[in-house]
Length: 292
Picture 1 (cartoon, helix red, strand yellow):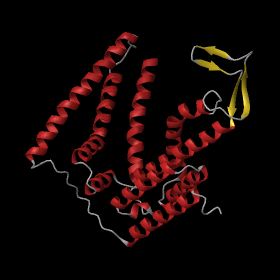
Picture 2 (cartoon, one colour):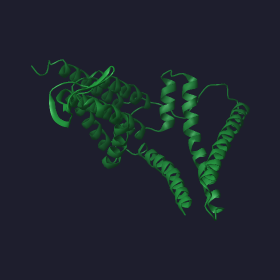
Picture 3 (tube, one colour):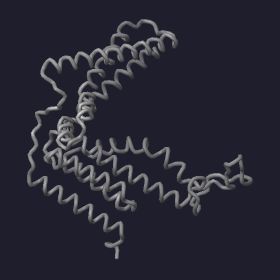
């Protein structure tokens, strides 16, 4: 039954999302380097690192930061295999559509490295034109290397932050750093009730599967899928109203309060000093001062 296999895959996908999220949450309670840091310190320093990455233009610096992220993952007791899969799952999604055309002489003219296609002559269509040879250029490869290294380093540090921090601590840290209240509340409620709706979707598919004897037509399947989208949307609206009423009845006045208590330690000061020192070294390296 093809439809049954489709339902099985859907149930498995929903279960995997919840399982991976819970598995990722387990890293934040391990005794590691980054887990021991104050959430506010991590937020500020990782933001500094991400800003620094956006200003660096030497791929060696960016790949060096990526290697540092691997070392930090190991010191924070995050399995390198799991971490690498998380990083390189996102990097192609962000970079492939941009990097692949950019290496061609159509987008980035330059010295040819590899000829992909030879035409009988240049082709022109109005304002657009193709050269007689479609090649991969050295300048395009350099640009692709820079872009890929920047994306890899940025994604690696962003994922490292989320893996080694509890979401509640991240939200509390954002609020203590004067992030807008409505912004923090929205993120917190989204993270909290995402799993509720994953379970709701899973229950709907299980109920459908347990009552399915003969496969439905494609039109009936589309009708059922559209109706479940509507049901899920209505349930989300009803649940949001019920949750808001429950919060008001318990004294909620619009302020996000958390049970997390933050305390700065010598380890936080050492981490800040190390990040600032590394930032200065990278900036000096970019300017060529350390190369002379």
